[in-house]
Image: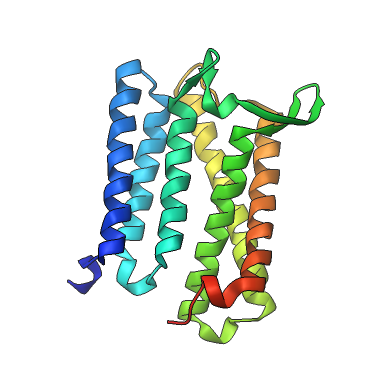
Length: 205
């Protein structure tokens, strides 16, 4: 049963995460936002995967908080109303504005953060279970490409939501392309930071 014995720090992150997931679940159901029920199910699966792998992976507390904050940003993005829409559609800075393309939006920041954290997690798992890869090009590049692949899977989940639920806030072709670009950008930035500060953020087992 050792795998089910969370540390105090892990319990804190877990309780925080469960609290906002339950809160947003009630909110989404109360307003009839069934699109995000798909994401809640996905969140539950991911939370379960992290929970069942705690002792095998020994995620640093900072990594668990980064994952949890990503989940919170995601839930808030679809559940917090802003100017007649939702937080995900909030325009933060008019860095680029041309036709259907607008940079920078809240959605894009969340994508970059989320898949940057994903790359960090994959790097941690790779170097923990295969310590001979630590400091190699494999450890620097594989997690970034794998995170991009998971980002593409996320877009497939969004596409499923579009097919299953009418009037979603997922967006069209340009939104999908920008999501993929920000997923990649976040993953690459994360791996640059991990490569530079790796010993601080991904300690040896």
